[in-house]
Amino acid sequence: MKKGFIFDLDGVIVDTAKYHYLAWKKLANHLGFEFTKEQNELFKGVSRKRCLEILLEIGKREATQEEFDTWMVEKNVDYLEFIENMDESEILPDVPKILEFLKNNNIPIALGSASKNAQPILEKVNLLHYFDTIVDGNNVTKAKPDPEVFLLAAKQLGVDANDCVVFEDAVAGIQAANAAKMISIGIGDKNVLSEAQFNFKDFTEISTDFIKNL
Ligand code: BG6
Ligand code: MG
Image (tube, rainbow, N blue to C red; front, side):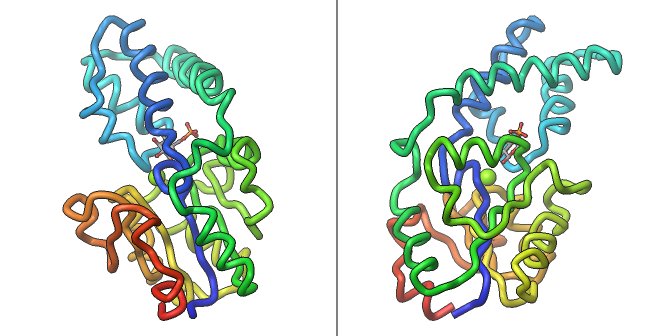
């Protein structure tokens, strides 16, 4: 079995994309334009700053630095409100099964997320105790597809990068895992995540035997 397992958060452990969407849509509407669910697909795995840049391109809006900073804060305040009542019921199917299996086999587990809200979300859904280390948007300077987030996670686990496995739902995340020379496992649409080494719709399709044989 591989020696370290790294999980993305949004879209892999919990479906937070819907809350990110509501918060970005609220900002777009406030700025006077529409933002669709299809456009929200572009935001998966993408840093908050880059998301706002894309949003402003969609709305053909210019922003001063001050406005840009204010809107970043506004979006996050709204997002935090939307996720305030998240609990275990929002964990994606069979995620605890895999975490439990890894824990029982003493395999180190890391989080590798672009989000700056990762730790509070893991606390809300009561999964924080599974993770030996957390690397998130607060710890990295380069966003996915740069491999920094996963390389740092491997380092903090004390495991060689090529002994690590990454679960990701975003194209940029799969590219980051591949760039880090880790095994990349796409969670979601295999046509979208075609660069992944393995593809599954969700964790219900992943057996513990598959994990053992990696
Ligand atoms: C990623 C999400 O995990 O985190 C993106 O897929 C999000 O949609 C990014 O923009 C940053 O998240 P946050 O919580 O720091 O705004
Ligand atoms: Mg994700």
